Length: 91
Image (cartoon, rainbow, N blue to C red):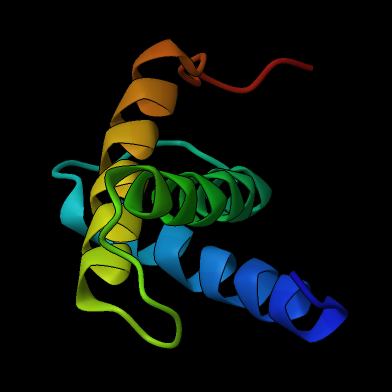
């Protein structure tokens, strides 16, 4: 992977993380940096799964985008389940 591809994956991962949050029902208290981190990990994970399954042939791939978004949704659900809830203000 080139430097340009790596930068593109990080930017796409950030967008995927936010999209994953919109698909998840309810209102969670996840910070924006966590959504970006989850999206970046999901983007790399989705790319890896597509290549492991032999579905990637280079360039833009529908399977790759689908796997990335599905992984982002699953990861946001998982992180939201374990993220501590805010119960009120502590002084």
